[in-house]
Image (cartoon, rainbow, N blue to C red; front, side, top):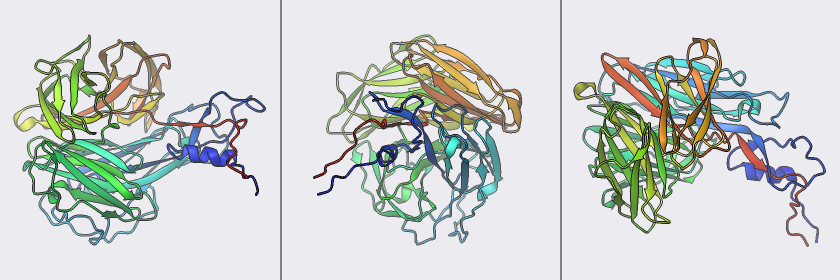
Length: 517
């Protein structure tokens, strides 16, 4: 029988499929040598999805996008590069999604007869230069798109929506995310004063099929619908959580999985008293979780935790603040039963200084958990809500877009036993300005809140790129964007994590033979 040999290119593509397509250009000087570890090369393709931002005619949505310069040695040279986000199509009424007939203002929704537009809403021209586009009213679409070539490694995008009136008066922000097949959202609700929608966006040319599970304080909720939700090709489907169950609950965990295809998923939460914002997915379940960047002037903070696996979770709670880490009063440890969602009222835990919450197991091992914070600023009729999910570390590099002069704050947290050195670069502006960089030291066990350097001669908005020193301890980041309207300090928090701009590729000298004779 013939012996079959797996080509380097095929192996590299198979490996890179987990994070993106990789450049197959061998590093300089690698020919004829035997590598002891895989080379890290830039990805050649990235995908991002943004859900439909609002149903309000009073909304104004800004889409921003950016790719950092200088990804890594071995980046493809001289190849054309594109990075575009184009409108998705609202699905027909018979898409298979649970009924969401009532919009947030109580008006009937009608199935859209629109067709997909090939015209990009936003596109990039070159690395290092951010782009922005603004859409007014309820017509701002969900977006699907991809970047390739030199624009793919580290491509980041965000949608920021300001709603000037009504129940949903708020500033909502969400980093556009890559498609996946598994998402956890602690912090959702079916309470009477909340209207929470799960938005499912399908980037592919074939339909995706998703399931939604809900978990409360007593475990899984009985759901009348929620299985086999069809998301048509290149479409986005909003699912109102209260249509999935008759149970009214303040704090829920939403689990979204796909049985066919892949989707982008996010929860849009509207509170009758405290505005609205997006709840992004929690980091993968783990015994230790970090929730960075609680604003110093938060008036009410609630922790929501869901325990996965067969065992209960017993967790230590620490607040990493400006000068040290300490245990908030009454929270020496928290207990979360297996398969259940628990919530804990932290009140105004930060007391004037930005901080980050660190959850860790009481004993060795520990049960994996997912977690998020519901954060409120202001009081009475001037409240505003935002969410901070547990997040992954920055890793090699992370970027967050749509930063504005005198409106952005960056929180950097080093929860371990080692100080961290972090380079923060403010990009050029969307309409002009020169980049600025500054290096900061974050002491072990603390949170450093900074006002980023504004690009010299800034016009428009800019991107922030965060690069920890490789010899530093792990770093977690959160960006708060705040806008004051009619005396209300509206805000939103994003938690950028490693951009996965590079991928490990086996060296050519490695033997990739498969079974033969």
